[in-house]
Image (cartoon, rainbow, N blue to C red):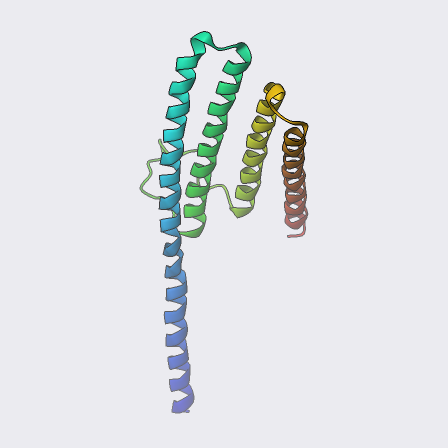
Length: 177
């Protein structure tokens, strides 16, 4: 009887240590989020560079060039929002809750986006970024080949279709729960 009890205790200890190690491994994701924040900083540098270049050209720019410049800034802003959304949601969903953020500063969506909603928001942002690139192509159509325009449309339609299928899949799997 003692042998069985000793085996159970040893087995439970091994299981506890293994589970603690597995649970602690979530912290291996933290450097990924730090890396994304460094990427956000790089994106900000590009944004500032493009903004300065845009401001310098505005006095002599044509209307289409101003719109293209603004679309570029919007595109970079959406990409930055995308990074923030992935970092905050990913960290809170997979690593730890951000309890040191004051309620006043805490974005309304923070803590309420699960992995499924994050996927949909990511794809929606990608579709928006793709739409901006497509619009920029249409605004600058004289400088683009037919082949380039076709590829912009194909890529955009692919993202839109993927988004629709992902949303349908999520809805169907949610209704079966």
